[in-house]
Amino acid sequence: MTTLPRRFRHALDRFNAAHPWDHNAHYHRWIMRQLPGSFRTALDVGSGTGDLARLLATRAAAVDAIDSDPAIVARARELTPLDAPVTFTIADALTGVPAASYDVITCVAALHHLPFTDALAHFRRHLAPGGTLVVVGLWRAQTPGDHLLGAAATLLNAAMGWIKNKGRTASLSASMTAPVRPATMSFPEIVREARRTLPGARLRRRLFWRYTLVWHQD
Figure 1 (tube, one colour):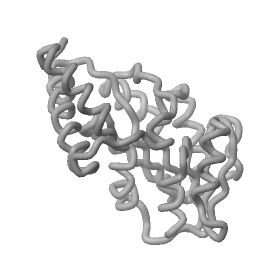
Figure 2 (cartoon, helix red, strand yellow):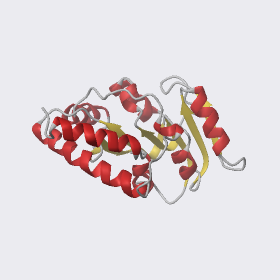
Figure 3 (tube, one colour):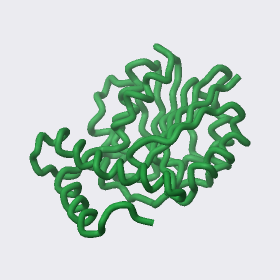
Figure 4 (cartoon, one colour):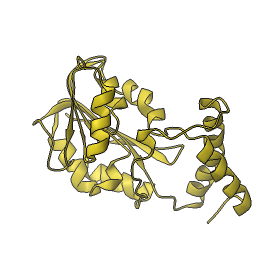
């Protein structure tokens, strides 16, 4: 199903390519609002170039940031001050978590690369009592409402690109050129499976083809 004329969508695609911006970083400040003012340890899964990990380090005593891409981990290390309490590790999210438990776990635009239910169960095991898990993920459009929201996001995406780049043509940053895998789960499927694994999880469909999940460990 499409909600915008093909020629118009192609024109928007060309415009967006010339005015890119980071959809995931758009939610970083929102993520921080879901977290305590300070905490001891944090894990950022799929950390990319480390923007969120460095934000977490402003509140945490120690942050472990893991990503499976060696090149992007190397770039994250280059961008991070030596005195920042962040350790970047090349690791698989399901087998390479460095510590037994964390007060905070974040996962942005990485969960759809993993077995969904297994990954949530894995995060739950590594979350300390009283800890908080925050996920920003991708969902697959399925219903007419999904496609209408996608059409609105397409238009807003162009406006945000223009504003963030101040009208100038921009180049892609390293965090925006990482491999992208399309989402395979619809939002209702995500809600159903998430609440089976994380009872009481709060999920919300968001703009820019994202959803959010927040869960607190008892």
